[in-house]
Image (cartoon, rainbow, N blue to C red):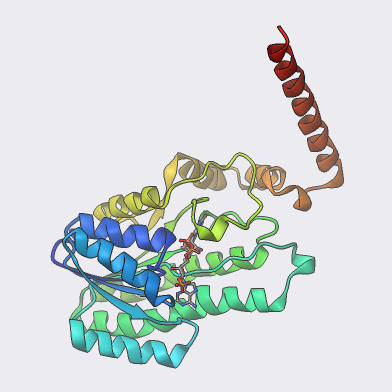
Length: 287
Ligand SMILES: NC(=O)c1ccc[n+]([C@@H]2O[C@H](COP(=O)([O-])OP(=O)(O)OC[C@H]3O[C@@H](n4cnc5c(N)ncnc54)[C@H](OP(=O)(O)O)[C@@H]3O)[C@@H](O)[C@H]2O)c1
């Protein structure tokens, strides 16, 4: 699809992947972007960057977990700025913890933001898109929406649910010329992952790379958009050999989630590595 002259609404636009998508849309000639998140100050900074790239930017400070406020804000935005052609549902939260020690407020915030928040904003916009027989909805899931990962059980559950939601809407809205697709980023360098214990062997993408993958996916009208070679390879192996991939994900999981035998084996390797590194350093300092 060509985004020139269109209006997009991007949630989670105050930082991270949502911000990068808004800027990438502006670079590709979109006319207007409605920026949604809670933090108005951050939204205004992004709006200034969007305007510098030649697009119009409108900030809509909104907490997506406050369902009635979302409907009112969308009705007002549609009246004031006209139809939204592209909705990008990017806002999300993630908590990493062992399931057995998980905290209910964390689980609730993931469900409220990642699922109920997406539902709250998609419904009023989808209804209006259907009335015009035109629109594109992009739901940001994750690689963890295909391959669930230890220590991220409830986050993974919301991301799997987003793919189900996306697939069902795609079928329901197809007759109304409304496209529904999913974006599946892998580990990306944003605020979200700063506090997380990382999975071994995962190479971090930049938000810009994720935004570029979305632009390419939009041009191909792809129903599911993978990001980067590592993400695409994981999706392929998941299709061909899901049990093998499950074993690999277990090994890659943060040490706290893996088995005691594996933990001992890993600490031994790390210990050997550090010892060799130290003796190499010593041999260089004292020739
Ligand atoms: N980073 C990764 O490795 C990764 C990988 C795969 C998928 N993803 C997905 O990509 C999306 C963006 O993640 P990110 O990495 O860019 O995270 P981030 O940097 O933490 O940004 C999250 C965005 O969501 C907004 N947000 C959170 N709660 C909200 C609420 N209740 N109402 C409105 N906005 C809310 C935040 O804005 P305010 O705080 O201003 O409200 C912020 O703009 C998420 O759906 C995430 O699950 C991320």
